[in-house]
Image: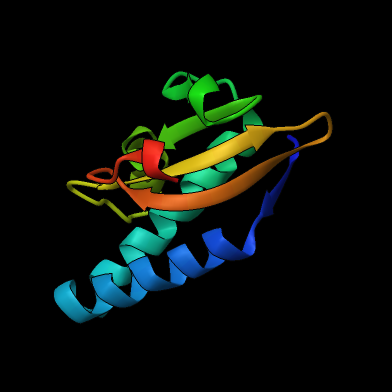
Amino acid sequence: MIEVVISRKARADIAAILAWSNDVFGHHAMHRYKSLIGAALEDLAENPLRPGSDSRPELGLDCRTFHLIHSRKRSAKKGATVKSPRHFAVCRIRERHIEIARFLHDSMDVDDL
């Protein structure tokens, strides 16, 4: 397992995602989504090149995206099933860690970052 470093922008993204989830879907749904985000971070720490982690050279050297849908099984094992996750992590693999730059809604055009 490698270290996961979460940027300030990614932390702000997570806070906004969870606040919106709580406001729209309620407290329990927000906790399920929080668990899903945690599962995705664990998955990336175990293997940043795992299936579902897509190379995105147009975003920069060693950049990848990873949609939360790929961590649903891990999250479900903890009793936190999210039916339709809509976010993905934008990350960069470094020698000794993986940097999470953003968590974005899948309707966003990452070319505008």
